[in-house]
Length: 129
Image 1 (cartoon, one colour):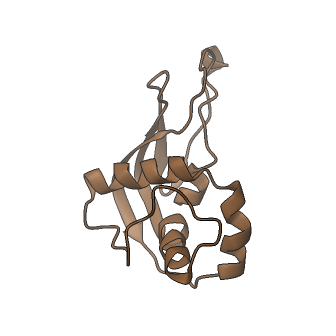
Image 2 (image 1 turned 30 degrees about the vertical axis):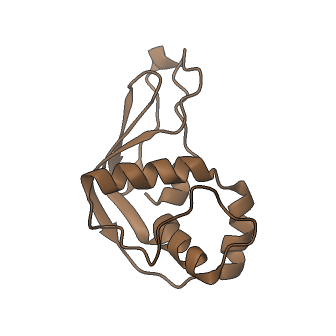
């Protein structure tokens, strides 16, 4: 699962008030480099929930400190016109970092959703709908 996917997922368990952002508990992470598409990134950024992305990066770093090696640290707020270095860093985090195994945890209910072979299973049980 890429962090761009994580940025849009939320828990829909019955009784959940917000269910976002999901907490990442990764047990296996891989870094797979891919070409940077600056134009696509520029179009994606307005739709991105940047504070949730920063939180996800912190969670991954706390468990796997050496996996995310960036040119510079990410700013606390996303600039309206990011430079090329920031776009490269965002690309690396959003598209090159793959959570292969682990769990996503709802911040409201603590319900966990497994990540298996890079695919998050967000299917709810009948009593959770």
